[in-house]
Image (cartoon, rainbow, N blue to C red; front, top):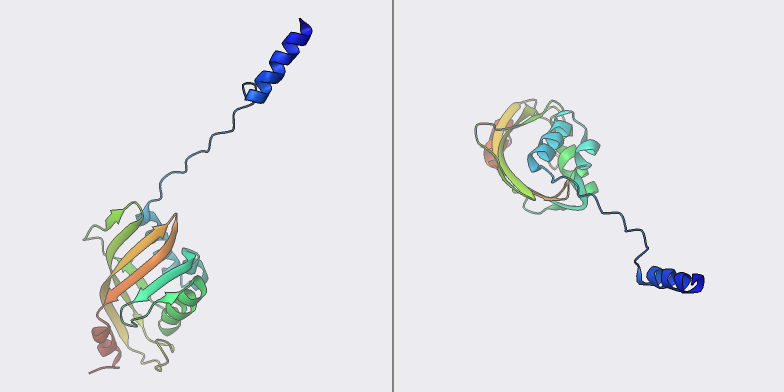
Length: 169
């Protein structure tokens, strides 16, 4: 009888009946695109390019409509977009327009904003600082992958911006 009981236990073990069930994966809470954007913009406003770029996937595509070609990759976006703006306007402030509700989906967000500051440093492809204040509005489209920005598209009146700096007539 002991032998038969041991055989039964061995068979149950082989069939998986006595195995400890695998732990269930704990579902992570859904990502709130607006929370990601607010934290990302706070990093810009703290003038911390590395922290802001930390919100990007490694293969981010950052499209600035005034440039026409995207900066691809976290390092490129940090250097060629974020740091460029922070160097050109060390006092810059980027604010989300709260009079218009952002348009959200599970993995993206679109919102209006205003960007302002004083051009006291070089940047934007090399023009010398003008010392002039500027303020312009635009819209951004962001697509997330998890809690990171995989695509950002910024659309604004670059001509009006350059006019404020005295770089266009």
